[in-house]
Image 1 (cartoon, one colour):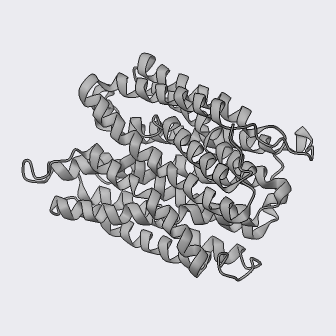
Image 2: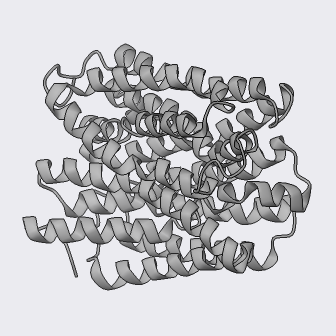
Image 3: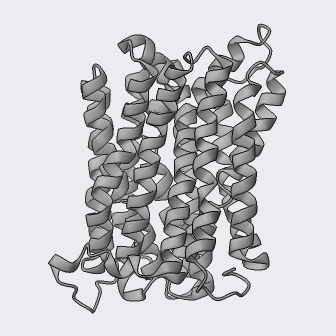
Length: 414
């Protein structure tokens, strides 16, 4: 069993938790990778596609306050294991039983609940077991960056498995990944630290002390702005690439849309880790302001790029994939650094609730705007839809500077 008592053990623990996260997230983007297939098979509108994409994060947002705040009272590892098993069954259920809009909604909802009990609960478990501050900051950076790796691998595996065996096997493989992740954590990660302080159950999801912590609240709201942009981007990128390819000369590029999307999403790992290192060197607020404003500018322009040469489209989304994730670790580090140690679980719960609530709505808004402006075959509609992402992410720096005025102004924090 691994804990974080030494540098070597801490490194091994981080590696195991990152591996488990990637395996458990094989189901994360499977639906998004196969949207075109389901849209034709089940005759879904863009708005309905947005709902199925969004309900995944809606399930997360609904469950995360209890599951993450519960780690202030119970062992995070136990919650993690139950939740990972739920994710495996949700993926298998989608593969075997989904047959339209409503059944897809049900299984994606349960998959989102599973993510609520694994992603942030896993981060809480990791930060409990890795207590040394410098190691903990890098543990947060690597773990949160692997969310992007999980998404990229999910898209890639879904596309490749579908092309060989069909869409049901894409979800079956994802379910198997969740059960492997469950076994990895069961065998190789020690029990979490059950808190010594005993918060009464009726006070467990009391967010008032967290809301009173203005610096932490500023980063929480900025995290919501970040996920508003990121989850709409991940839900709709493959569909946009399919549209762009339809405007290109035949055989203009050798990669499939899911392979290209995998490349873009995988950039999240180095972007998030390097972004965190730059925030330590130059100041967290400065880094976040620069990255989020640049990302907004790109979102306002990139929707118009569909008819450009495909290599230009890929280059644009490569840069956009970097800006949408370069702020991730710095935002989470800012929340953890400014949280009350006795309320860290509740703080991370509110972070997840705010962030994933925003992330559950943005794919729906994106799809509705697509329909409103003429559908997914219209360049103006794509430009309008991408602009909704930019408007959201621009709010991030405003929240940090407005609410974070009492945060110490030193390198690594400002």
